[in-house]
Image 1 (cartoon, rainbow, N blue to C red):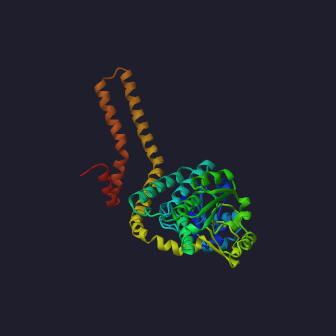
Image 2: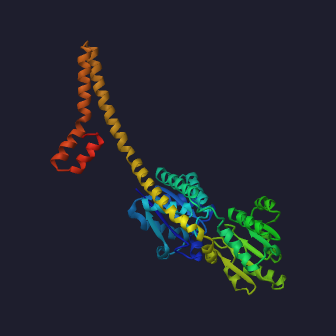
Length: 417
């Protein structure tokens, strides 16, 4: 069996495609079980699905990649050819290298952003809960997270507060010049919105509201920032009160429609509303961008700001790449070692069987009244001869076949001059 990393990301596919292929969090458990049951030869599965990427990590037969494409196409109702046009695949050590880069933030749209490591960990924890992670993916996740922690600890890649959330607030600050005169409405209550709220508070925004499907979550987050909590169902009635709307709910359907924004603009007497939709699938209907007084940006529109904010991290990223390579090499060694465990157990079992047989023979002789010293000498000779028989044969055959490489290995193994 081999490890496959198969997926799409912001590097290969636009947001319109990524939202079609993304797995909503509430369906991930079922998708994992379906993958292990429906894709031929797949024994383990984990899925990372964020706004910037959807990736499958599978333990499977390397000749079955086409089955993965067909399953994914059927699961997300997308033609296989569409997926293949934007997808990438990595196997074994390359899969490990890719996942370490992902978890370290080296493959993120915002270079070095910290949330992705938690998202990778959560994806594997969810897969463990679903029962689709076994020894192969457990080893991969363990080494990945260890290497990613080393990157974040030993380099400056995470020092500056750069993230999608920070980029969204930076863009708002550029549009309005002074956020102290603006009011902001945040849709969602997850980590991204929490960071948006933190940055808005740092910029001194005049007022803030937080809307979420679950009111208690909105109230919990709002209490930290002296913000107004509300449910998503109440957003349309209050849109006109806010200059800035930043959305990241994780909903599978838009929560703000073009009509709601159009009505809000009329109530504002055409005073503009700045909207940043950083969710995938999108929270705001794309048609809202057609409204003359609505300035709608998606996560892909943040690229330029993000590039300006990450320049200081690029040198750190270069240093981190060597740690990624070390991590991938470590994974390969550990995987080989794990695969050698069965052979090692068999080797030890064989030695113990030989030892037990010789011991039983000696004990019988002692029981018949044999001379102890002579019996011990025969026991030691018999045990030694049987144990050295395989390497003795190997040395003879290697010499006869001219296998200098094998002879050198055996000399090293047995400390021979």
